[in-house]
Amino acid sequence: MMPRLHLRQHGLTLIESLIALSILGIVAATALPTWERFIAKSALNGAYDLFLNHVLLARSEAIKRGAPVTLCPSRDDRHCLDDHRAWGQGLILFANPYFHENPPSAEQIIARYKPADPDIMIATSSSHRNRLTFLPSGRSWFSNTTVRFCHANLPLVNRALVVAGHGRIRKAVVTPEACR
Image (cartoon, rainbow, N blue to C red; front, side, top):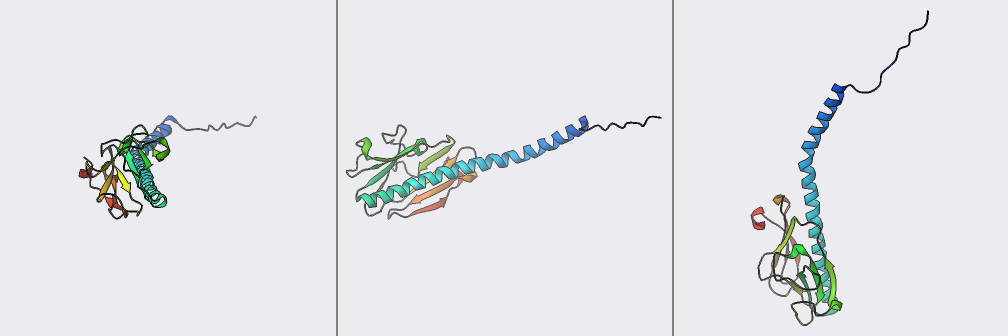
């Protein structure tokens, strides 16, 4: 008599596959809002950090050059915008010894920045503060200003930066209402 061959089948049944896909779907649906919040918070933190670096660069350049340096919102990397809510469109940093409204030449421009996320709004607290100028002493020309960083979809991750008249820069908290 011939020995009987037992063939083993490998793999999953249809029921087992459907159960695994259902569990995967539940886990993905649960993790997606957390993931979106993480991405939004990372983007906002990146914009905040880059802006802070430009503010610190403006202050240090003013001290180093012994002349005023201005940071302003810009769409075209050559001219300042007169909108205090336009900082999220880009900015330029330029040497400004004669307090011009715009950089007099391309050689005066020290740095440029174009943000990557259109959902992030960067605005100063006053419609009269569409420029930040630092004097050779390191002081900010004008009075205190708050720069708000607001995410369009997730207001709980909003942040702020306060530039004091004496040149000190500090972090601040922003309420969701302040970004509307």
